[in-house]
Length: 250
Image (cartoon, rainbow, N blue to C red):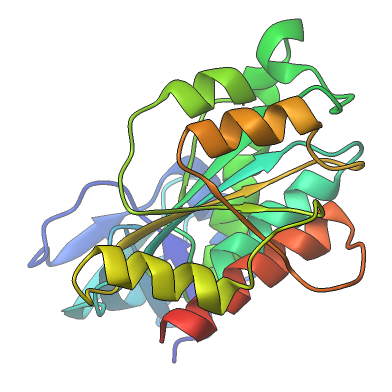
């Protein structure tokens, strides 16, 4: 595996050379101190990778010579994490871990108990841009060829009104929540034995979703699922939810 990893925009699979953006050039040459001839892996975030060597070590306009290209294996289960935004910088870590685990989408949510008001109080665009950078950095670090979509911040009500199929789960501390294995078994039974191809995890804020929000999620088809007997911090719950689903879904 190459020592350096960079993100490129639109590029042909058979491109002989790749030009890097100013930001990627600066990070590769000025920050990571890559020199001409260094092996570099470039990826587009949509499953295409190019094995390259650094042809021009320019911190403002680096260029890569392509040696070969390859398509990464497709994702068997597309997971969306719809996450109530916690205080402080915890959302950065949630986005990073979701990327490392291979989530396809991360949707930041404003709920009754979130103190951060990005969807209705302003500042959401700047924060979403920061979270997209966190996803890109995580993809570079872990070698993920698929960059998750980090959507615009929205209210829980707006999110629940969106049409979506597949498996719909909400992490819940409320009585009557199902084990994940049971929720998956019930889904497969409804689908004639077929495993889900798309899944959405709805994860609440500190203090969990309110009873009214849980009713709204259930009305939208979300199944309450327990993550165990302990009360988890929201960043732990998000990581646990994705990892458990990947394990149980095979």
